[in-house]
Length: 110
Image 1 (cartoon, rainbow, N blue to C red):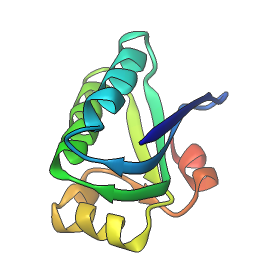
Image 2: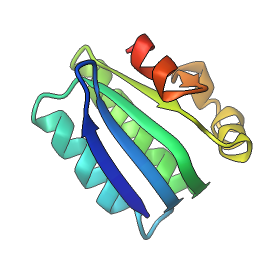
Image 3: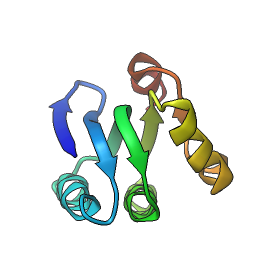
């Protein structure tokens, strides 16, 4: 898994590529929670390069979303491949997490 962090005037963007599973999710969790701890409240996660997400990866997204909500912030997921998006939909995450088509859409909605 590779995570590229980019600060934008609207939000902090994490571009995640590869597999987000039980082996790689702790590193992503550390990065995203550290950023939230430093005061970031608007986060975009770009999953354009994500090939696979396991429940451990979903848990990291859920934890970040809860933390951001408590701080009055928001998280938006974008550029999900169809099969990754389907995982979020089956789990019901799309009912409380914005899943948008592009990074531009995500930045416009945070």
